[in-house]
Amino acid sequence: MHENVIRLLMENAVQELYVTNRGTAATARKVSATLHCEVSTNEKIAFELALAGAYVRKRTACILSTEGLYEALDPVMSSAYTGVAGSFVIVAVQENDEEVTPLGPFSKLPLIVTEKEEELERAVTYGFGLSEEYRIPVIVQAVPAGYDKGRKTAGQKAKTAGNAAMLVKEPGRWAATPKFRFQLHGELNEKIRKIGEAFEAYEDNVVISRGSTGLITDRLSRLDFYDEDASVLRLATVFPLPRKLVQGFVDSMDEVLVVETYPAIELQIPDRSKVKRGFVDTGRGRPQYDEVIAGFSVIRDRLGPASSINMAHGIKRLNPERNILAVTFEDHFFHSGMPAYVNSLYNDSSFILLVMVSEREDDLRRILRSYGVNAVHSIASIDEIARFRDTKEPVVALYRGMI
Image (tube, rainbow, N blue to C red; front, top):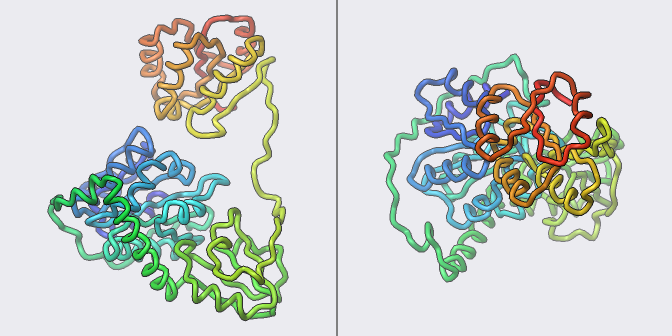
C-alpha cells in the first residue's frame, strides 16, 4: 500500500515527506530519487519536521499509523492554531483497531476517512487544496484492506509546487503568546465553519435513500449486519461535519442510528432528538488476556511504543516479588524505550526486558552497555526465559522471532 500512497503524494507535487518506518522510506527512494524523504525516530519529530516545511510555504506530508499519530499529539494540537503557509496532509494508515476519528473534533483539524483506493486518491488531492486555501493541516485516514495491492496509482500529475522556502514573519502566529492564541482560536473557528460548508458538496459523502430508519456511518463496511431496507448516509468528512447534509438526512427519518467506533459524528449532529443511543457489539476488536510465559507475567506495548517498559517498572515497584517480563520491539525501543529503560535503571528496577530484534542488535547492545547493563543475552527459544526467573539484576534478552 505504501508504494501507491507515495506515488499518489508525488502526483500531488509533495516536496517533503516524513515517515517513521525505514521500509516506507526505502520505498519512497525507489519511487522517486528527487523526493526529499526522511525517516524520523518517532512520530512527534516527523510531524514537527513536516509542519516546519509547511510553515515556509512547502507542500509536505507525513505517513504515520493511526496509533502513531496520537504519539504526536502535542504538535498536532498546536498546528490547528498556527496553521500553515504552504500545505500539509497527514496520511494516517489504520494498521490495528485504533482510529483517528476522535482526533478531528478534539484537535479541530479537518478529517477525511477513506475506505477504497480511489477515495484515498480523491481525499489526498482535495486535502492539499483545502490545506492551501484555509492554511490548515488536513488528516486523511486510510485502510490497507481497501487498497488494491496490484494496482499502481495513475492520475494527472498536479502542478509542481515549486515555492522557494520563505518564512513570513508573523510572531503572533508562529510564536503566539496566550493573547494571540485567543485571536487564533477565533480564526480557527471561522476556518472550521467554512470548511464544513465546503464539505457539503464532498463527492464521497453519499446518501442511499430506502426506508424511514436511517444509518449514519463513516464506513459502509460497518453495515454488514444491518437491515437492507434502512437508508444510509455515508460520511467521509468526519470533521467538520457538513451540518446541512446531516441534519437534512436526520429530519427525513423516523429514527437514526450512528454507527461508529467513537461518537465523533454523533456529538456534532445539531439536533439529536431522533438519534437512537446505544452500543452494538460487532464482534470486532482484540481480546485482552492475562498472559504468562515461563512463570513471568507478560507486559506488552498496549499503550504505545515501548510502553511495556514503564508499565513493567511500575508494577514491579508495587509488587517486588512478582516476576515481570516486558516485551517490546527493536524499533519501539529506539522510538521511546531508551528514556523509559534509563528511568527504570535509575530507580533500581529489576524486571526482565525481552526485545524482539531484527536488524540493529549490535546497536542495541552498544546502547545497553553504555547504560551499564551487563546481563544482555541472545536467546534462541522463548523457553530460555525461564533461567532468568530468580535473577535480581536487570536482564535484557534479545530474541530473533515473534511471540
